[in-house]
Length: 328
Image (cartoon, rainbow, N blue to C red; front, side):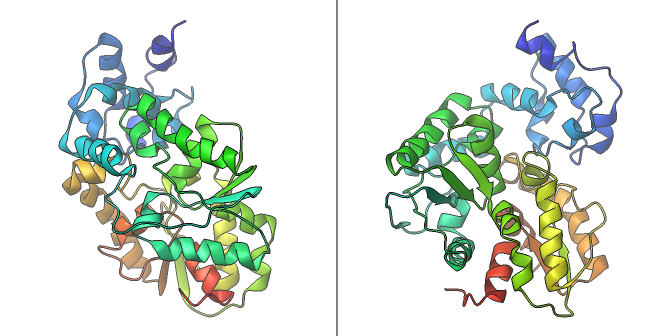
């Protein structure tokens, strides 16, 4: 059985569950059938790669992978922007300023990702603070893009080349464990290499039971579940996040907390109107709950939701502040 057959008609039983849960209302069945016939469906650009379809599929058909593979022959302005940025800067976004890091031989490395390095440096500073708080010696490397945005648009060969540049730098420093703060980086490092142990900071916080070190106040808090962390890495990551927030706040779960906010899969860059349309439902749920604080564990979700949810914070930042981090 070929990989193409395995990913399309041979496994799919046409039950339609994938279409019922798709936030973009993408016809997964139509896309898989057209992929099998060699016809490229235009609607595949709408897929946020949230993997909700795969999670609901009774046969575990890798629908998202099939869609990513179909995208490799597509050229759109959004995909072109991603490719141009990586070709020019080595990052998925235009860097605002150089990201200078302290490189040293060490068994642990912190891999921050493009958005954190160049837009949301408070997340990186917060994760570093908690590593210091735990007494963990770590190194940084002069990162290039991990390859996640390239995988989402089907440029797997180029994604592998970018990832290998990072892996070579980690090897050179004797790294064994990599701490991450971006779900896209986390899932990419877990899926495309098995040389290093990969831990999202939530795994680390859980391992050290850091919720025991914080005090509680009466603020109402809620949490956006990042798709690539909740479904691509592990649902348990959000169990940990909820435990931490319950220790710190009056935590209340959003309805459909795991529903995609519309930021992923290149959709925000390729079709901003659709991306914001998908976000609107999430924003309505947040406003209906009326929390004092909204938390996520994904830089991309934070950037996207912050347009309509002022003050949304990454969990690493609120936890670090509770432990004495001053935000610098």
